[in-house]
Image 1 (cartoon, rainbow, N blue to C red):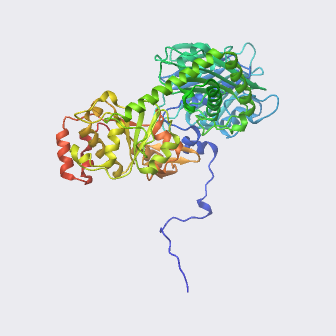
Image 2 (spheres, helix red, strand yellow):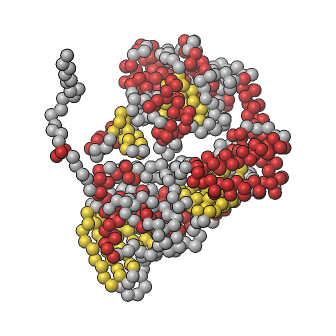
Image 3 (tube, rainbow, N blue to C red):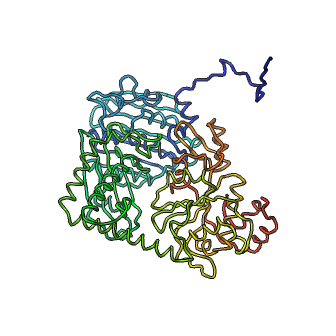
Length: 614
């Protein structure tokens, strides 16, 4: 038998050796900027790449001054330091501005860097490639050198002898390319925060920020920094602030923490690794929490207290400061530390001994914290008992599908099915994120009697804790936000519209008082290596297509891995929530629901309820 196979897709383009292209470094960076710098919302990452090099000079005691200048009128950005200066011989400034994976930080010799922020040898290449104009100016070894570039391409250089006191060592100037960035005005607050972090860790260095004609000398001591960074106005009563530093050679792990007795019970963490703010934590946070949990649980048994393991984080406020030779991060934006646990074994062994030694010597302080954890547990248990005895609120163990949170002011996510809830449960913070998957079809009805026949809706209302009229009580609501998160397709929009209508009919005050939200979810995303970039709008999608990005169509929330789900739904800086506003045309909407029943024509008019682009 002769078998023949027909092509699945007929193509008219010729594919041969001439189809293969090899891009140079600059072209590749310009074609795929998100792969190298993450977000192209504004050029803050370009400033950070150059500023990291200045910080590395300060960390290694070669510089005492680092300054950043931003001119909002000309969009010129400038980074200066008084360190050693980039070597001029051998056209090094040109090399490190045009060739990826170039730099001194790969050198393990005695003249290389010990602790550094810039690690991958791509920073200045990105700054050059993504700028319309780029200049490197250097004073070193009695020479003054200027290298200029245009749209990433080398234009000219000028090197002359110099005698006298040099004004600086290295200056990087650039103007971000408006074709690459949505806005070419950088995030000034981010720059200020970076300098503030650095000033705390490097008290012998001076950090200066110039914005137009305004000059700021950034300086903050450790105590003030901890109060402003880790505490807020509700943290009026705290335990003693404890400070521990474990050191192994030039590597250090510093942790400063206390417990708040009056603020939110949810733990709060902030950390910097080699002066880089690591906003999403990482293995260092996990290992530190394990130290506290194991130690406090052992003392709980010794002194006869009773609380759950996670209660030992109740009100915890922590700042981590790490200096590592080889830190590993997730993604080029370096938001999360990803070293293996074994990397920290020696540092954590020393840290563990210090913490244990302190509390063993301060037994009264230890018992006060144990009492704090026990009191918290008693309050939580009392709330559960009250909840189970109140017909208007749910019992915490009644539902098999609801994955509740510990805090009473957390967020409830209503999602489609177990698939969507799986990733969300894996990445959530169980203290503040609750997940309720819908297991069946939501009814397209607008009367309380008909809606409550549906088991899913009955469980949802009980979980909210408010009950319904005539016994509705908004003060008993369990969550600060109720978030409906559905797929970004027509079916998902249909379900979110039906869910909105259910809340509007059964518990309208939840909408009126601003508790109810829809989570905007992406239908497309850029996925290159480990970098996931959601495309929220048609304009972003079109821009990505024109840039030749690798674009995927998301089948639904269940397709996202935990990190992607966290980025889309949980992280406040990256998620997009739409707060639903109650409409005066609610009767019109009710009639619409009755007329269309389960038909999707409803979606054409959902703007009646929802204000904004959804």
